[in-house]
Image (cartoon, rainbow, N blue to C red):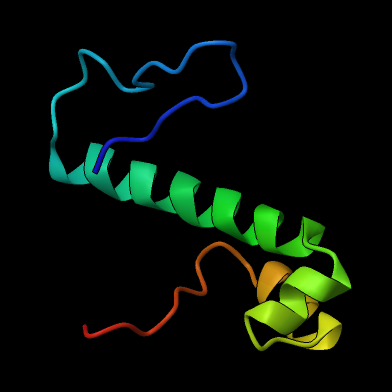
Length: 74
């Protein structure tokens, strides 16, 4: 998985030059999860309705601790 820095005028890989070790991959997954939860918290009510979530559901997910990982096929 490659993460992109979209805040800059041009996009570039964030982790260029890092070896894809288990620890590095795990840390990058956690950074990605943190970023997704923050983005979820910033969605407006119309966008949340589009994805079938209430404001309460979104804030519950966004405020979960980083170590509280979603259960997806593990």
